[in-house]
Length: 243
Image 1: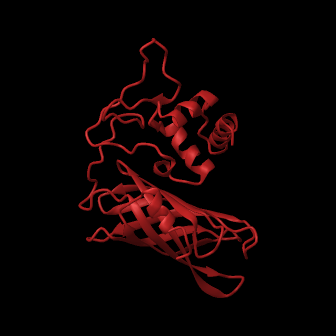
Image 2 (image 1 turned 90 degrees about the vertical axis):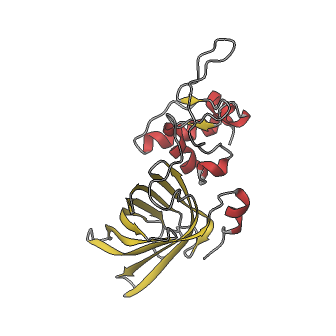
Image 3 (image 1 turned 30 degrees about the vertical axis):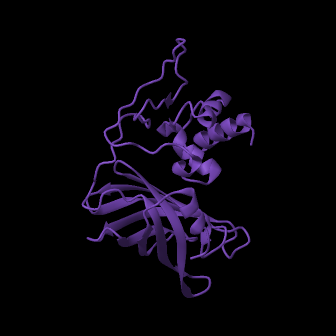
């Protein structure tokens, strides 16, 4: 994409998901040049959806402990670009100071995890398991979960989750786009999810709930198993394959 095309795609994604933004070519230029080290929340989710990658994999700085943020007013007096903040030394953006403090006994949950859930197919009268290698990025008590490219048991079925941590309880939503050439022919499924973090901090287990094709409510087990604490590009490439 050109810078104009990327800015347009981010605006369209924001409108589609009820999070309108004013992304312009100038925003993209500042991200690419490094003048802005981290976009604000209004852009982050759209950037991840448009590119299919977590924000950390796009080259942005992750939050720094005890950091402070400042709106940028340049030396020549120019006003800051709408919706952006600038890193100055150990400063971070994301709408305010975002210390990576512990939210439970396990500290940050960022890393590579194996996601595994079970579901019943009424059309095939059988039970199946869906698996994805996912990258989790933690911002305060929020977990952004995105499946890695080519890392699902059902090819071309990207999975996303937006979760909130409260002690050892993790709650949120999930969304999966099935493969267009697969059994479900590109159908999009979504629902809710609640997990309990085990004492080791290396596994989360719980249940999912979602609607079936006949508008019935289905449920089943779901677990996330820790694999690697690194979220570097090399590590993500290492797990970009079918589980």
